[in-house]
Length: 211
Picture 1 (cartoon, rainbow, N blue to C red):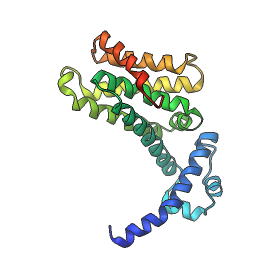
Picture 2: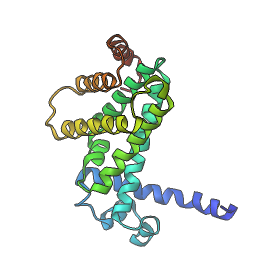
Picture 3: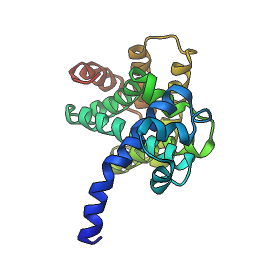
């Protein structure tokens, strides 16, 4: 990238961000299907041509919003991991923080993550976090040599996303903290972690500053 291209990219960033913020608010309040590109540009205070300069279509815009939401949750999880010491504690923090972050911000983050039946968009959400889990398990492969990281990551994330959908739809009536701890125990047991270590990891969640 040339110096001129970098300068133009910095100049364009606020416009693109304004479109993303407007789209995020509308997708959260109205859903993917009911939101139009015209509504987005009116909310962002820009033109339809400018919007299509950055995003090819509504699906492309929604995916960009999804990626931003994913990255926000990932940053929260990473901060939680830094507060933990042992491997079971880090795993517990990853499960609990990711789930609680989406549930507590259900009016925006949660609705965007589960608010569309479009398979490609749903796949983007699941794929992003599945890959993070897969990388983590591969990095610690010596701890679970008998477990396939890919299969474990899919099983882990599939259960998490299902619980998130049921919680946000109101079908899961339990307190999110109770549900979050259940998910921690379920996933850590699936990795063969000892019960004493699991309970110590649950106790360590009290150290988290963002949940």
